[in-house]
Image (cartoon, rainbow, N blue to C red; front, side, top):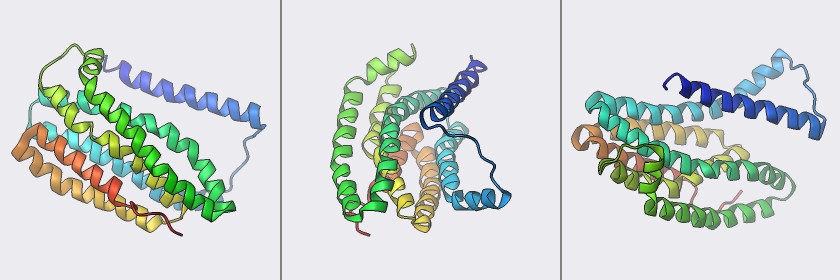
Length: 239
């Protein structure tokens, strides 16, 4: 099965990418164009901080599981991975929403900054409302979700999922605020947040695992992400 996992994951992304390209060609009559080396270098430099953000995200998610494996048993790593994957999948349901409103927000910022500010501030309670609903549903039906994913059942997985489910409330704001910082061209602030996240993760997660085992990782990870997602800009948006 471990050989099939990368095949299924990779093929899904490849098929989705090909369908997207075909749709763009048919719907908008787009064509490939040659990009000069100068343009390529410019865009690589321009988007490097976004690449760092994705890299950091991988480090403090996959890296935490690696650290957990160094100080606990393979069974606990498996239990944590099951709970974390389920919660991550539910949190990922908000990604299409953030991706969908991004072009509209970019257009709004360019045409009318006041409407952009009003729209941005209006979206926050809406995101909070839907994320809270998903949080409650996850708590209520977590045993059903666990049973659907795996036949392995014990008290550890539901407990971990209960702790990690609090991520569902704050996670949508992570992508939402990241989009705002990118649109407002606040590269240094975006990079600073990513650096702080990785640094705090290294400082907090290791002792949490050593002293409180797998539950320490779950609690510290949720507190860290919630702090980062909600503390940056929670005030009304001004330009």
